[in-house]
Length: 255
Image 1 (cartoon, helix red, strand yellow):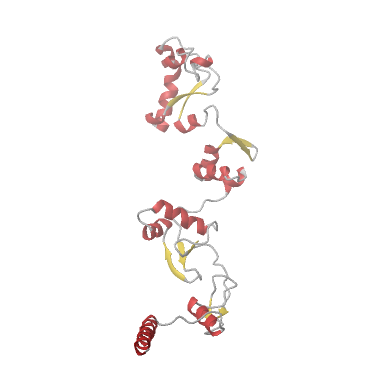
Image 2 (cartoon, helix red, strand yellow):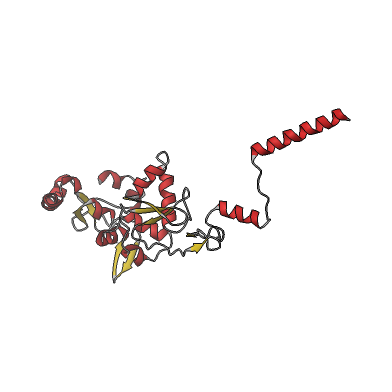
């Protein structure tokens, strides 16, 4: 206390004119020792620190108390306070009251969330089952957590894999590694059944405009309609080319 207040270069204490009004350690001990023992008995010695009630006031018996590090951190200068339900508190205090992680509240606010919604909306469980399905919505596997899925999909780059799976589940990205992902508590999207125009089999299209169950059926339909020519068998094509070349050579000799 004395060193920081006597140092004029310390902008937060000596530079602001904050002073220690106790003339000696004995005076400080006589005023604060009894409350110190009571605080240590309740919160422990490692979680007991001297705190000024008014950050613009001096170190004195009237303006000092023993506080936990959490209480002291909420009493710092420059903190942002939010008023809700007629009460003014820091994000740390609100987060503690509603049982939500402080980092999540800050993240929500940075994305433009309303303050009350960012604090009160229930957080998604840390470990939540994730559903993996193919591009047509056919279930492949239900993972116990995103961590388990990311470890399987890309063990060498789990951070990137987790981000991609989370983006697909949140609707910000369509697919990841050719699969669709959704949280287990989400309602699965309704995918209407369609009939393939060639083989007449039922299938669930990835896009509403899709008419065929596979690229093979689409290619065969185009050949039947004369849109494209059927590809020749490679071995047959090579044999035809060789026979044509031999025939040409024979004709040259006869001439």
